[in-house]
Image 1: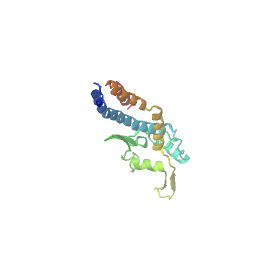
Image 2: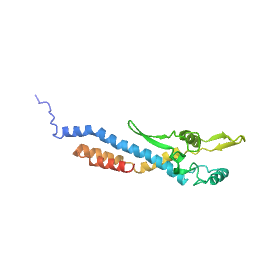
Image 3: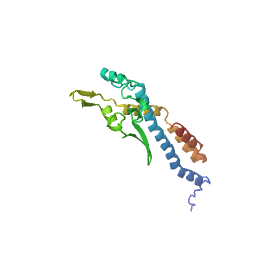
Image 4: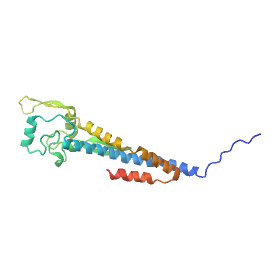
Length: 198
């Protein structure tokens, strides 16, 4: 009678199993950092797009431009710029991020706008979706605010740039190196790159 086959495991098997058990923690760190980098990228694209007025938004009306010029606004022809970054609670500073359980989340700040009774999140939604507002000066004039979807445009720009620099091949390489050699130097490099760009 033939002997049943016996499997002889490599001496390295336990070491490889141990390395594989370390993977979720290492990979989670890369994705957390990447997520933070992603929300910061959206905020940066949002600010740059407004400041440079290159989102292709509906231009301001001539009356609004004149009013902004009279008030001494820094970029009177630029939609949503107002006082710009000089005011902490202006629309250009309406986006922020916070740490959550599995990464970071982008959100619209609820602080009161520096010139309005409205919170930034409400004011930004009005500008993004557009609105028809009855003039508050008793003249009965309707003011039309066209939709200016700046957050969506910022997200699209940030995702387009991320797509060009997708690190998934680097993560795969880091995983293979860790499993096969026990070295986590590529993970460390990815962590440094992710933290350096935040």
